[in-house]
Image (cartoon, rainbow, N blue to C red; front, side, top):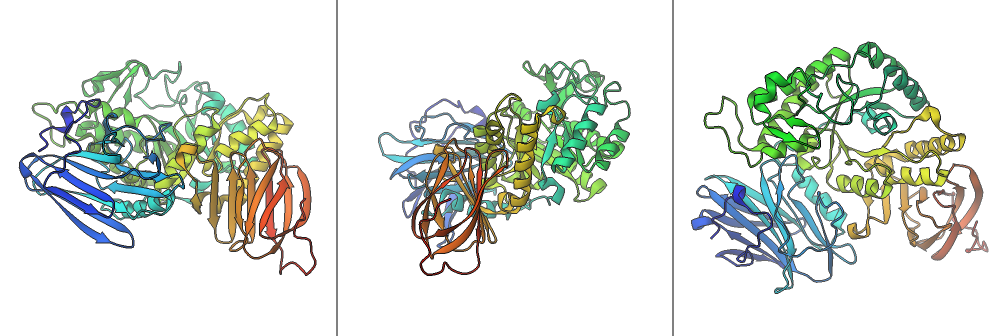
Length: 616
């Protein structure tokens, strides 16, 4: 029996009874599913679909807290992936901390995988909005891996858990789960306008808060010439937006010194060819803002490192105020999008009791309150702009339910860290059914060699890249390098943003990523690793050497094919153009560090007598 309320959980406490099998215990293949409830207040049933997996249904017969455990033998397990994994990509112990999930923090989804990258246990729950607790880890005694979900249900409520059939790659298992999640009520993804899938010029790392209209307009013209399609104006445009803190947030009016005519400025940038999105953190309330006096009673939580308070979105008055703020900003200045930041700060109210006499419209659950708020923002902006509008959300609030509320999902901040950018964008893409996955802003040392710039770009390659440097101050070699990789990205965009991809094992930090779309394929090597290359099903194959090696080694299989080969260095300078006959076996191609090799299928098969070991 489980008598613990989710709100009273000690995250670090070990539950000595968590491996106990109650009467509600069922086995499906190697997976054991067990339900613990107070006084038998819920039932557990299964429905099975052999082609896709199994669905467990928990139905509450009375109000109470339930704990659902799913566990499997360890087998050859090496890691457990979940949306908020960060750098924790191996196997924790079963006494690891409980984690709180909600709409604005991760999602109840995970996958245990083995050394070959195959799934052993892949699951998702439909509790993507309400507050839920999760724990997972290895049992030292039982040699099994368990996942626990703890949640509150009222009589008649249900919780559905989908278990994908084991044995596929981790990415394939998660694709099945994201399709299931997208089919849940309210899970239909928000349409993504085409411009949301074009490269972005962002002001943040280039200017931080020291930004002005004239400087942005100069950079916008250069960005458009390089092939960017969007400009994201970040923090600093607003009144009192300075000092790297947020004590001035709350009024959301343009700074009259930095942006004396904000609407005209936006029109200027749009005429240059860029859609315009502005940053806003509508839940932050600073003591220097004029709004503080009015809204302080609704913002009791103070965040010292942000130097501001956080509005409590459980109050209907707060939600109405935030929606009106966003609507007014877009309507007044003609924006094409909003970058909505710091939504995860609302989790501060997850365990705060409701007031004794809440006003009409108060929503006690923080996840449900945020869902209501974001749905109202989405609907208000769609009324103004239809589907030609971007709502950017960032980790950690990029779970499956968020794709119905935002259509640009960004990696959380990782300045000058291409490894983190790669991991975070691929993590998002594993669960994003059709939202545009955006990188964190790409920045680099202006004195670094072009190969370094290219490596930073490669960290964002399998997403929509956001660039944030002073374009007007680029050296000729950096401008050449950036232009080449932006051009390469645009050429490969359907594969990189809409293709079927396999990133490999998360615990290896996705070292080799394969993507395919139609008759195009891309393989990106982030380390010096042999590239498996089948000769069927493509006419164009791009090999990206995102490592420091000076060659790429291909393990070719399939029918012999003759290809045209073009090799470029990091700056995009052509190194070699030749022909190569691909036959089964090992082929070594010299590709400069941070360079690329494009294989184009030539018509017909190799003629008799052609060498099968030609190497450029």
